[in-house]
Image (cartoon, rainbow, N blue to C red; front, side):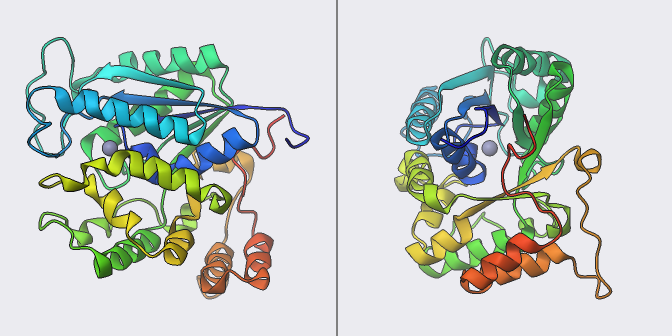
Length: 313
Ligand SMILES: [Zn+2]
């Protein structure tokens, strides 16, 4: 336990499994350091592409919520909540609402935000993790999660809002590595990541989660149980788990955020005369060999934050 006050971190995600890839290391690290970690999902993930044996009878949602509980246990999460919306699916048009639930994309943003804000307030959460405006790779429910998360923080007066993201070049590298040992389903379009997530220069927080990689892998494994399924983006997790361990640690040993109020916090990374910013140089040094020198270079540059609670009292 360090000298700081324990804080409360609330991670908001669209579907069960989204936490594994984007924020599980940050969550495990916060819990291990003595903070309270709460996980909220908007939907039950019932429209995920999965084995036909689970789809179609509502069994998939039940199964995926079970996986979410297993992931949460691995990460040290204290509380798991579901906002009660139905998964909208990946297609351009969400299927009709199932009995008794609204597809998340059709939800009234203020009403959904009020549900999340109630939990933020009840927990007196210090930090909210939500999505970037692209919704990562653009799933309609992820874009909606961005809108709902930002509005909820406003309603609850949450002090710090961090948008989970990945530098685009890093996600492409992870996919290229995975492609060496795994054949992605034909519908998986690598080029769809060209405009997804965030440009490296916009990232304000880079969190090292290498010491929590075992928990992160356990979280990914909890959801990758659909690996024998007959298709689906969820199996991206299974593909990533097959990356040889040293490379996996290099790619997944860090998580990234954009502080939505970065201007207010005075974080900027002005480009130098080459149009390169210090963050790029520091990150390249880190990526290069992970040496002590590289890590020092990564730390020294222009004020990238390395702790989600930094500066909170
Ligand atoms: Zn999702």
